[in-house]
Structures are given as structure tokens and as C-alpha cells.
Length: 218
Image (cartoon, rainbow, N blue to C red):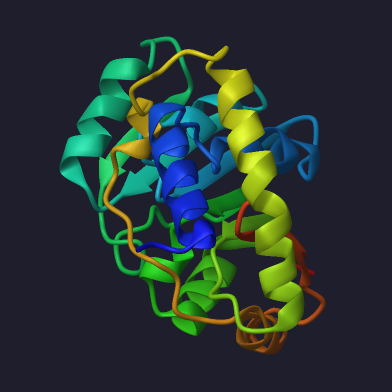
């Protein structure tokens, strides 16, 4: 017989499946707050269905969205009005990025799919002097603090899903249809590698199983 704790987790899983919401889009407005009011060129790595790229286009002269998945990239193009200053390309995130340099580079829930240090070095090369890099990533819980933050997010996750869906059952949004995988790096290793590759980088654990990294190129 399943334990009460196991039954509770199953009930939460069923509830969350019935009331899905995009944890990455939750941070899009936070991403915008890290950026200048206006900038020239922006690059969104792992652009998915294009939600963040379209937001960046309200501030930027041009936005290049890059994703390795042709299906989700096709959806991004279909969802983007022609007048929007955002374009989308199917390309490898390490070898196929538009040369730039770019004033802004964003990467949300994508860097854990890539060799971490190599990805940061690639972003650094494509970032203009004075430009801003913003990463929202996933990490593997390892410490007591990690697990406590994850536990605190569980009821908030359910409540947010209920509110965003107004209590109704819903299908996952288009932005949640891209392929994904669990993170394998703990936050401590991410912090150490990031501060070596990007001296002065600022990192912080966040709710909903995410962390953030911001860095300005000298």
C-alpha cells in the first residue's frame, strides 16, 4: 500500500498535469528588468516558441531567436507577426549563432542541454562590450537548502497553476511542447564554473527549480 506521502505526491502530479503553466515564461518579465530600456541587437538562445524573443523585440532593433528544434522553430515563426523585429533560425547553439556582436544575449532553460563552460564562452564571444547576458537555468538539487527551496515551491507551484488557469483544466501551452531533459549540474558547480568563465557573474537560486545568472561584458 502506498504511503500517505506517496499518495500526496501522486495527487499533486495529477493536479499539476491538469493545471499546467510555463515556469520559464514566469521569469520573462524578470529577464526584461535586467536589460536597458532600448538596445540594438538581441540573441535568444533556445528560443522555443518565441515568447521571450517577441518580448525582447519590444525593446530591441532586431532579435535573433535560435533553436535546434525545427518543429518548435516553425511554431515560433507562425506565432510571430510579420512586423515584429524578431526572426527565428534552426541552428546549433554552439556553432550556429549569428555572429553579432549582440547587445543582449538571453538563454532560458536551455544551457543544461549544452556543455556548460563551452556555452558560456561562446556567449561571451558573441556579446558586445558593455552587453548583458541573462541566463535562467535548471540545476540538480543536492544540498539541504536546494531541497528546502524545492519543497517550498511545491504548494506555490500548484497554487500558481490553479490561478493561471482560473481553476479550469487546461492543455500545456505551446511553449511547453519543446523537448527537455533534467539538469545534471548542482548549483555549487554551476556557480564555480560560471564565475571562472565570466568573472563577476551574479548567480542566485530561484523558486520553481530555477537559478538565474547575469553578467555584463566589460
